[in-house]
Image 1 (tube, rainbow, N blue to C red):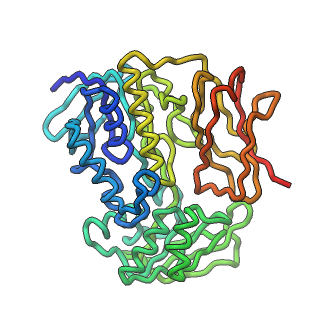
Image 2: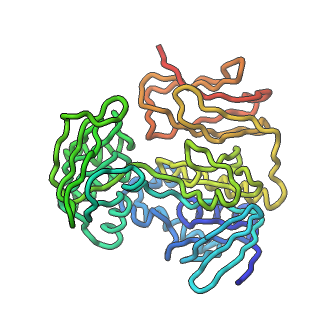
Length: 415
């Protein structure tokens, strides 16, 4: 077993990991190591060949590979070490990592760890789709990998379950490659994807969207032959008599993403049941001192530029921790209230300005975000339109939260 001591270890070499590493390097830490399980740096963006990346950071409209190449080039320029084809198989509460790399096993002792493992897709088994088990059923990300990186066309007549962003983007991708996307089926009364993807990927190509519907059966033995969809009631249960059979050879699942937090749990990090990510303070420090989390392993983002900005903050915080300059003051708990699904960070200090991220429970118009303590409204933020697919960001100055014991974020209608 090969043993190493590293100041900051970054688990994951995707958008969050590379941004965090660059930030830590620029903040005075030289002894850094990125560990990536794939054969290349870049993570999931390597297969995202569509445009839409970099508008916030670079003020340009880039493809995923173009966006990531800028960070890969910077990692190389700064001389930040990385390990490829390397799997972290354990992290303990003493910040010791066990890493498997081809024929070698490494034991790495870190002063600080940044978790940036990203997320994974929900599968057929997790959502319990009934019917036979033929070939031709893929998660949307798997199909994206096959068509964009391996030049393999997975089908000709496609049905997509779920209207998440990856599924919407793949609806357009398949159409451009000559396949027929017969339907996008969404169990909720609204789309789970960004409005721009609804417009550019479905509306522009005339692809039908069935809201309040789900798949109640799959048909076929060796290869998928058809699916049966049905309308659902207010409890999301199929309504008898509304079934419709659609002949197809491929079913794509775009039914949500789950942060990859098995390693986090092993290290003792406390997980938020709503986000599936770690509970963190405004420094992105988890419940284990010196372990930080950022990107989709913390909460699933809608725009990768926000992942980069969050990861840069994690890099700064980890650097300060290594230098013994990261104070942890008495913390104020932040609670999601009426209409709010979750708020990050979960805890804050009154010693500095704080940026918040939240998602609402359902779409709406003419809303007001209220930031409150027990006795007063600290701030009102009007929103003409809200959507669960779109992250809401706001900032509180330290003087606005001075003396607050507990913070509540909620939403109300504007008359």
